[in-house]
Length: 522
Image (cartoon, rainbow, N blue to C red; front, top):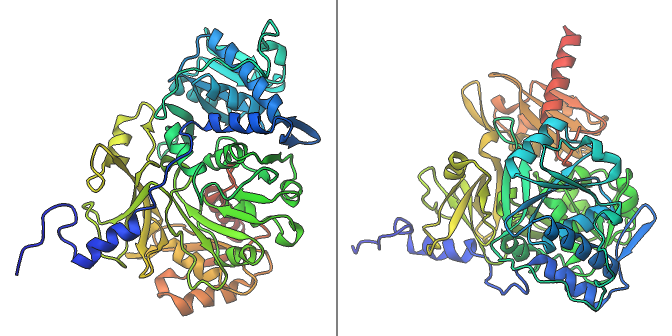
């Protein structure tokens, strides 16, 4: 019998070697412009009077947005901001937020976003130090909350005189001086929650962002005239999908106030976490024709409910792989709710603990490759070495990223998301996938959302909503479907599940809740 060829796929059967590439490699397509702000500028040139954004009754056209961002970019350049620099964008949802974001990109720098109304001062100070944001943009109302070290500059975006040019030389007919920007320069730096409690800064390049937003399906078919809701925290990478995904395609960004549902009701396109989307009634959103969810597992009932009314995309990808790197157009008739296939110019590999590809259908850890792989963590070489690695499959200097998501390929070539490696816990010595318990609960009649957590070495606890879900029925459903050690000791019905500031389920708040409940019961 001839020996199989050496190399990273040599241990697989010929069939699995073929399917490794057929399933794991997204289509190779050209990206119209590797610099996302150039795409926004094209929209402004084509339709300067079109409305770029609205917020609580205020509006800004593409032409005005472009002019104000040009003026800000010129001020930043005068202050010495150069390509490769990081500029803080410490704001709340607003039109000035958009001016700041676009102006930073036009200056050739990367924006470092934080919601100034939510983030404690010590975290802002950590971000200023780590990202070396010598210049910070904010609004006058919150300027006092910015921890500004000596030698740093604060610019208030809602006081245009603070950055407007001193002459009227800059007009719509006067081209903006072109700052030399490379596609591999940073576009933004997002701080994710770190395992040590200190947020880690992830550097995401223009090439990364343009690749997902300016190709399909990542562009979500957004066209001029479409209204895209801006619901999410500016520091969350999916907010970049809302904001830049809208503006690069000429849509109108509907920036929400306190009422999420009010913004959604007037939108054509929604991008949200499942937790945020579950609070919106599809029947109240007659305009919505496209929905995309990511950030956490989506319950099948939620996906089906929206897919009956709109093009519904279930997506997956951590911040480090640029918003999402897999997408699936889900239909209620589909046998499974999957996360689909790699987006254009990207790859996904299902590998074992030794980073070897697994045969089709076997469960392993998903690694991401291609143009989605970000530039790494700021100032954290140890974490970079742990999570990023040379890509032996693409080669040629490419890198791949360890997502810590578990998955497997279906026979049809779609990815089933099977939870996180850190969601596999030991209970009474048995390995349990927490998401599998929650999935059973979400099939119980009337249950919209479920979360299962490990309380201690012997017990699981589950939370379901709404509050009228019967806990005994829910426990029996798990007992009927899974081994005894997967059955939660308690099922707590709640009217809603608490959220983090990024629109995901707040698991720490749930654990505190159950401990308080147990203390009262004792």
